[in-house]
Image 1: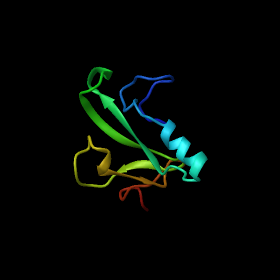
Image 2: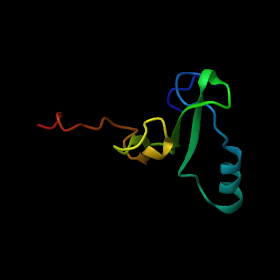
Image 3: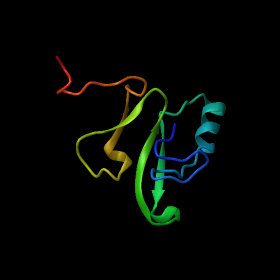
Amino acid sequence: MVPGMYHCGGGPGPNAFVFLPVLQDWVENGMPPGSIVATKYVNDTAPDVQMTRPLCVFPKIARYNGSGSTDDAASFSCVEGGHRHDHGPHDEQ
C-alpha cells in the first residue's frame, strides 16, 4: 500500500519509487523486502525532494520514531498496526 498516492500515481504523499530491483532480489535471491523508500518530489517533478517515507510490507505501517525530520524516511520504522486501531495513551480505560 502507498499511503497518499492516487490510484495510478500522483497524490499528496510520496508516490515515486523503484520496486523492480527489490522484486528481482526477492525472486532471484530469496530476499523479501522489509520496505521500499518512496519519494515525494516538489510539484511531483524530480530532482527537488519534498519528503521520503518507507513503504512497509502489509500489515506493517510507517511510524515516526520520535526524532529527526518528519520529511526523512530514516526517521520512520515499519511497525505492526496497519490492520487495526492502535489505542493511544489517552484511549486506555
